[in-house]
Amino acid sequence: MAQLLERLRQDHRNLTNLLNVFEEQVDIFEGGDRPDYDLMIASMSYFLNYPDLFHHPCEDRIHERMKTGAPAAAETVGNLGWQHEALAGLVRRLASAVDQIINEAEVSRDAVSELAREFLKRYRHHIRQEDNIFFPAAEASLSAEDWAAIEAEMEAIEDPVFRRPGGEDYTDLCRQIVSWDEARREGRARTQ
View 1 (tube, helix red, strand yellow):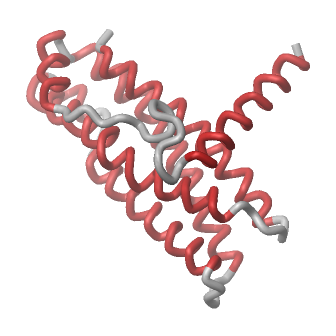
View 2: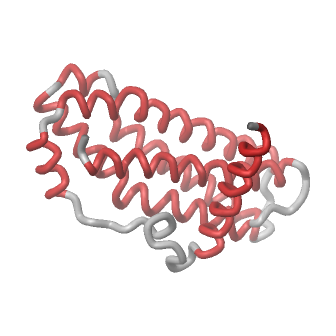
């Protein structure tokens, strides 16, 4: 299996953990309490940066290579580039809404909550679709030479939270994700 594909799968696991941490803040917000807005903004910043700098462009290149060498497999995925653009637009709208709340602008809590839930739902659906359809199709249809060419085309970008913990602006976010993951594992160990 291509090392690049494993990195993308790990990104999905990391993104899922981040979505779970963000959802905890949304739950607090919906309960009428004050969530950790710094954590929410850091999450939105991460979703606007790392996936758009490395993760999604990498997937887009894989998809383009599939269109050339395995068009039927590429077709099962749909328009991946459009999906990535739509997610980025949704993240920008949500980040703006959270920023408006922080700056005490007139914003409907229900509208922000609805937007946050839509973001969580669509991002999770997108990850599942890629994990269950796109990645297996890419793995089955691309050769070792294809993977090597894609890797050579990609600029090496370090993940500021998961591969370089403590990166600028992400120290609290990293700490919160680690704390959430430890609590999840502890809870799972208790139920076994």
